[in-house]
Amino acid sequence: MPESQPQFAYTEEQLTTLESAISLERLTRYTTASNGDRRKAIRLYEQNTALSEALYGVLQGLEITLRNSIHNVLRSDLGRDDWYDHFAFEPWEEDSIQKAKRAAAKHSPAPKSGKVIAELSFGFWTGLISKIYEKRLWVPHIYKAFPAHRVNRRMLYGRLNNIRNLRNRIAHHEPILGNHLEEEYKKILEIARWIDPTTADWIASTNCFTERWRARLTL
Image 1: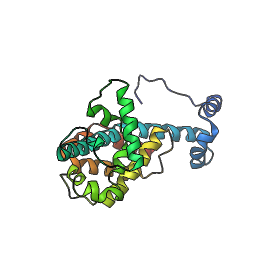
Image 2 (image 1 turned 90 degrees about the vertical axis):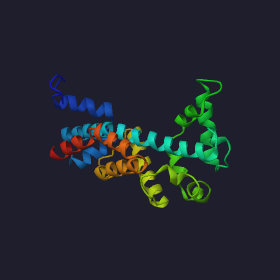
Image 3 (image 1 turned 180 degrees about the vertical axis):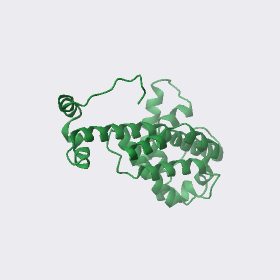
Image 4 (image 1 turned 120 degrees about the vertical axis):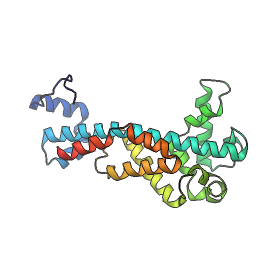
């Protein structure tokens, strides 16, 4: 914590106020982990927030790199920027595309493909690597989005699905402390490295996850 930041006392009165503000229900997992120690439960909650914050940029780096790599491959292979309008997707992916186009159109009546791509969720890109698209997308196209490594589609899909779940837990302010975070962090960087080693090095050098993870272990 920076020296200029005000110190918090964690008095019994303050702990009661925090429990009300956060809610006892949301704190249940932390209270259980701390064996009923109210102060420790709040500190665990703080650690969860700090680690979520540290992973936000890491997840962002992978998500943007992944979607741009897949987009660039499909744009090149299919010969058009709006490839998503010229492929027979399953209903869920097609619905996601239409929602993305409507969202992008709020800012421009004729949005460029980059705007539409930016509106598509991590779940959408993960879905394109699922078994249902193996013959239609993975084999002819998407494997090329990982030029730095020969990737097994099934293994990659499982990893991305786990990362997607972690991302969603962070987005919804849920506990992540028991999610093998150090292992997941390494897997995020590894997938980014399969796409582009330079970008993976950049992500690794511009986040504070490892520092905060080590701090958590010493508390």
